[in-house]
Length: 178
Image (cartoon, rainbow, N blue to C red; front, side, top):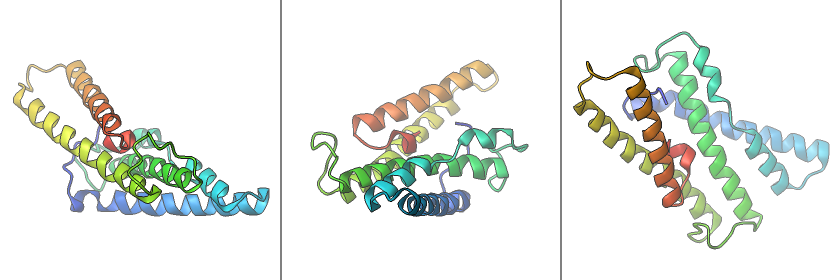
């Protein structure tokens, strides 16, 4: 919630690469371990890997730098990576559940499971980007000298709730939207 850098490839390339690699590696390694150690089917072991893949964004909270001003700071990279990682893992879980035939036809199914996963990611990022950009512009209109810390924090949580609610309304990934 404290990532205040603009959405640009130059800013987000390291966290996106890191999150993609760590998510896929964690899913693959956990699936291989589950398949070999517990004799689970490929689909079941991939599902377990996708469930175990997300990292904890709280880990970056104690890193001593200011993520809102330093795009290459460890705090920004870890916070952004964990947020994207959680969203990608949720999309992978939906893809795998669809592949296993466990998706509900009334729950945002747009066809094959791959389209559902793609819509989840693209729609979640789009909803979060639009709401985040709109709220950031609205907050800039407020007088920063008169704002209390509580008001700023309340706006951050309201923006997160709005992004999550909008993503759920269009049946996309709420984690990625936030």
